[in-house]
Image (cartoon, rainbow, N blue to C red):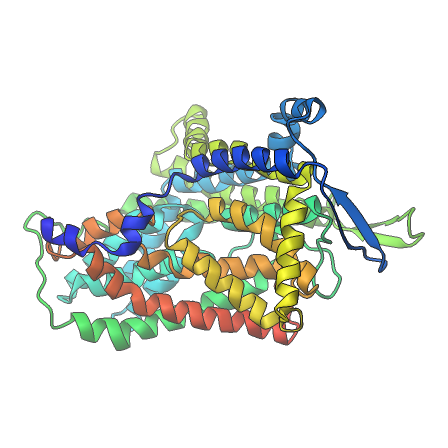
Length: 516
């Protein structure tokens, strides 16, 4: 233990001194109030869309009128209704995903696929399953990583090989997926829209098309999923396997190599889950060609006819329903849900896991509303954009993208949590980068954040599941340390960061839509 303490990385030492993100937002709220006391009344001007100028004035939040605004709007406007109800959207999608997870469906699917794969393709499948498991919150960490160790142990190969591949997919590939409107899509998309609207940034693509928050990155993340699967499998075979296959490992005497087998009743329940999915898709199809079919309305402002797409406008509820149905059928068949109250309990349990998000958003959304109302956020954007323009970066949007990715990747080593960092960086960088170069649209900036936030998760001991992964690996190699874990995962992290960034730059350079 003493030896490991000495080897603890500088990142870990610094990170343990950083407060919880919720505390950070409390501090930022107080600091912002104090700054407005000194800068209240200051005026500054920015360019308007028509080529003119817009003048802003920073408000002193200690004035009676502004202080009343804080209290009058803290609960409803600044928190529950922030960004048109971002918090509600996040919670609703967890009803369906949470039920599917609580029923055991997602865990069984992971085991089912993992146990059917041949040794030759196993590294690629483990990375792919890890990426896909992001829809099931912690299922990838709790189920897939130890399962990967057991699979390799059963093959009489070093279990850490499989565990490294699974961990890379689960954590470094967290923001990729083949399923649209996952919880991470909702958090990034709906908040990006709120950040843009708050500072008058158009929520449109570089081609001028309106952005759908939940699916704004779908094409990009599909390509990313396939690319990261190939990269992760290649790294495992060419670098991780040669490094570990000659090292000694132990199999605990009390370990049951059949611990993660799929039981007969689970196999039967999977068929019922398939039936639930088919019925869910059928119901959505009826809605798509019925009440939620596209229709045209007259835009009174432009005088032109516009197409309204109710199905896409309600994609969050649709995706939630498509998770809910198979989870419901699976849960009843496997015996997890014996009465209707069990279904409600499962959804409540899923909501319980969102407690930290609810607490975080109360303080972060009130802080962001304060930035917007006081005009201090606009002033910070103005200063940052002016600085970047003076550096001559306005004509080099790719450098702006790379700079933002590297900045976020480094911050991610010290501040964990996708949501908390996005609340810190999104409100500043979305308007700032757009004002420097209007090709830096909200969807592009959010995509860059995806890349950076995920890629370095596996090389920081401050990631919430790093300790759990270490415990799993020590079952086979008791002396395995934090430094060993970082060293093992480093090739994945760097490869994902470089190649994933290159894919995003390719989308940007050739004007390929990120989503729909």
